[in-house]
Length: 381
View 1 (tube, helix red, strand yellow):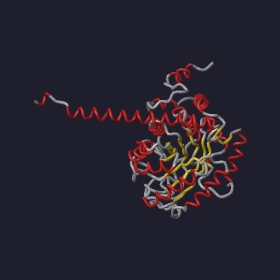
View 2 (cartoon, helix red, strand yellow; view 1 turned 180 degrees about the horizontal axis):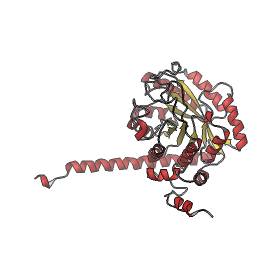
View 3 (tube, helix red, strand yellow; view 1 turned 45 degrees about the vertical axis):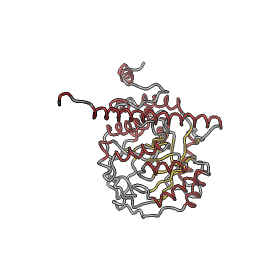
């Protein structure tokens, strides 16, 4: 029999039904999820996961740096920042043909999504034209496309969408309260504005954060709350474990307990039931048991690695062996033409409905503000 204390603790949570998506989670509710007994938390996460996904399918992405180093941002975790001496050399934007070649190799290695990242604060006009051609060419290979280029405005987001970009990655990194301890060259509002521009252009959002940067447990709850507030939820939510790089300000920060990391995966799954939760950076440092727990907690997306060779690399081979051991398999983008069309139509309808609802709220707020400006104050007569 379950102890009453466990029953009451679980009952006190306002857990959404498995089919319901909420955007109104409070930090206190999210902290209560984190505080659940580990087995209870994973049980809830598994129920949510199985209601929305094949529990043994994992979406596989490959990440390629298309422009490396000399970034003007001062993110304390990043070896590509020009503010720190990490021994990483500056590289120019890759040629389109080289990107296409690596994308083709990624597809042959089993990836369904090809992600391209550039170390920029925001893309310059002359570089954006090249990036758009990369998107078009990679898309033509039958791969889903994802880009992370820093901040983008409405016009840039629209052009990326027109080129066929499926996902845009822009992480929030941490909580609003802790953000200033990690980055000073870009505000939290800047990040949220970029995500809004991406949504307005009709693209899917990939946004998550990094754990183990010295943040408090409440910061992890507050980060997830920011992601949950986005309407719709990000379709892809990368949960990164800090990779401590010599030369960066965070190279000596204390390690995060792996169990705390798994709790964050499980809570993210519960909060964002229909999103892919990606076991992202730091996975190379995790043993097989930790990775297996992450998949049990609801992670269902991975990167093969942050560098792709033209032949299968050792990381990909290790992943295949782990998949075999756990009975996992790569997620198929579309099971059938009918199912794919239905899913696409439903996702598009959900996105359009969410955008319309947001626009209506903004319009109502503007009317209220205008009414306040025009209101006659009799006390001033």
